[in-house]
Every structure is written in C-alpha cells, then in structure tokens.
Length: 494
Figure 1 (cartoon, rainbow, N blue to C red):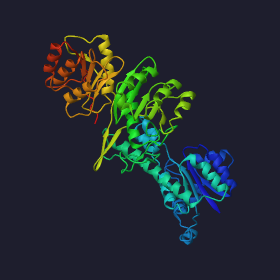
Figure 2: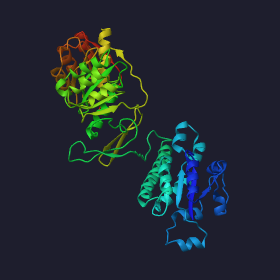
Figure 3: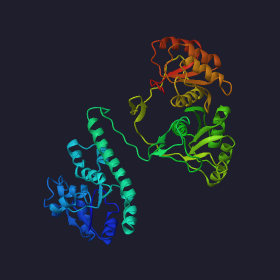
Figure 4: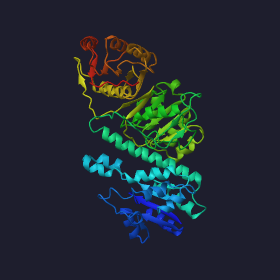
C-alpha cells in the first residue's frame, strides 16, 4: 500500500497530480486548505487528524507535527518496519509540500505579528524529514516537477536518481526559506543583517574563469546572470562581466545608444538619431579596442546593423531584439554570442574578499548639478557634460572622460593618478578635443587635471566637488574661461 501526503500553499496543478496518484493506487493524506481543494474535486483522502488521532489546533499552527507523520517519512524500509508496525505508522512514499509564502508577504510591509503567521513550521520539518530519507521517500517542493512525478508513477516508478535530485531541491528550498526569514528579522533594526545569507539558483558551469587555469560558474535566473545566448558559443566568465558593465551603461540612455565594452571599461559610447549611426560612431571612437569587444545597444538590431557588427570581430552582442534578417546575417558568425537585453533587476551588489563578502546597496538618490564658475555651460556643452558623466559612472576609477554631444572622444580609466587618466584620454582621443566637455568620477584634488584638459581643448568640466582645494580649482576654471559643474555625487568604480 503506497501513501502520499499532500500539503501545499500553491495549489497549481495539485488536482491533476492527485488524480494521477489515485489512479496509480496511492492512498492520499491531507489536511487544511489542501484537503478542502481535494474534497471539492471529489478526490478521496484521509485527514491527517484522523491518521494521527489529534485535531488541527492553534489556528492551524499544529497539523502535521506528530510522530506518526514524521515516523512515516523517516522510517527506513526493512530497518524500522517493526517499530512502525508496533505504533501504527504508515510508510509515506511521496511527500508533496510547498511553503507559506513568507518571501512574498515580507515585501508587503506587514506588521511583524501578522507576518510571523507566514513562517511555515510543519512544511519545512516534513520536507527535511523526507529529503533525509530520500532513498525511500520522494519529496516534491516545486509544482514544475509534477509532470515528472506523473510520468514516473504512471510508468516504472520514481527512480533513486530522481529521488536524490528531488532531495537536493528540497534542502535548497528550506535553506532559501530560512535565509529569507533570517535576513528579514535581522534587518528589522539595521539596513544590513549581522548574519547575511544568500542563495542563487540556476548554476551553470563556465568553460573557465578569468583565465584558463581557473574554474568558474554563474548563478542566477534573472537579469544578466540568467541570460544565455540565443546564438553562439557558451558565455565565459569575462563575457558576463563585460555584458553586465555594458548593459548598465546603455540603460543610462533614452536615445538610440551603443556601448562598446572591453575588459569591463567602455572604449566607445555614442548616441544618435539611429541605432546604426550610434554603433558606427561608438566603434570608431577606438576601432582597435573594438576588436574582441562586447557590444550593447538599446534598439532592435536590423539586417544592416547586423552586417556592420559582423564586419568586426565581436565577442558578444546584446540588444532588446533582432529582426529575422539580422538573425540570418549573424548566423554566419557562428561563435559570436547573441543575447537579448534582459529586464533590469534590483539587487544588492555582493563581492567576495578573502574570508567573506562585501555587500553594497544603492538607495534612491538625486544629483544636484550646480554651476560654480563665472561662466555657465552652453546648451551644447551641457549635453556633452551629461553624456560624459553617464559614461564616467560606469568606467573604472580613476576615470576621466572627454565627450561631445554625441560620443565619447577620449577615455582614461583605472589609473592611480587622475591627471594620468586625463593624459591617457587625450592620447587616445579619436579626434580634436577643441570645445569638448570632460567628466571626472571624483573631485579634483588639484587644478592640474583641469589645466591639462583645458590645454587639450576642453571648455567645460563636471565633477562631484568636495575637495578642500575646490576654491583653487574654481579659480583655475575661471582663469581658463571654463564652465564647471558640481554634482555632489561621486562615482568610484573599483
């Protein structure tokens, strides 16, 4: 005689599964809301309270917490049979459970005394018991696994391999559930809990890490982490980093925009009336660095743009969509990875360091642009400043960006000295910097960077401000007839 215990909050697909189980000679046991659903569908089952001899109590807090339930889940075949017979405990062969929706309800600003009632106790206890005894018991915590169970019980039965897979999912689910509760409670009096627990699903092994001798994997089912190519080779560790950086930058723009990313820094950024012209302009900022790059655009790729992208060796292309003609063109580049731009997801930034992790959160904030020089920027200078500032936010510090109204002109990134970043940007400039705007991701501690930029032809500069030598820098800007804006926000990127 086979027994299945069913107790689910999410009732999706449960009636069809129960009917299949009954048809395969399973006896069903259930209670509470699940029992009502089964009864409403005319499916026979035994009430848990009838089996245990104890009623549900304490407003449903106690239903399945009983030795006859947990003994049925933990009892080992041939080992514990005698004691189970002595106490009238049935072997439970299948457990179907999903949990009270604590994660969902905790996001609804409920009072703690109300939210507490969405902490499931009996469910996790049963899941852990069944998963521990996976050699004899199958435990199902995800409705997406119902079709597999249906096929298995209608065929040769649930295999040991499938029971182990289900047990892994079960323990992962209870771990995530407990983590959500722990994190929520610890955050009641603090922005960050003193104990921080995270879990990511969808793990996929990558070919290697940053270098071939390193191993790597990616975890996550949403955003960049959950994105996989619709064409081309498997994504690499470095590909994901560059895509993440490029997408973050291209999302800054409402206009048709293209970002060429290389080694986690932009080497060309442009906006234009058409996405084709934006791409051409961005690529031509630094054509040599565009070789082997990651391209992100914020408009559909058509056949014409696809052909132009394919004229350069590109590792990855990211776009909201691709026309059928573009897909055909891109197929000629079999190894080029083609990705769909995912929906943006908000989450804490987590970075590992030896012995632990750093966690960073960016709350809602507002920049306060203030002209602090004698001369205001012209409308064209202001457009160029805005473009340069957006790029600055997504470039490794120390960073200096030269730009006009449509494109970056020179990018200096990742230097220990800010003035050296300016010199590199000037050296790599794609054309004249006369009349350009320049952005600095942090305040200028001395006038030297501004003076170097002015000598190269820049006429306007944007920076956070806040240096003890701001007065000297402002005086230098006025002397050089430069317009300068303070934003009040620093954008270090390490």
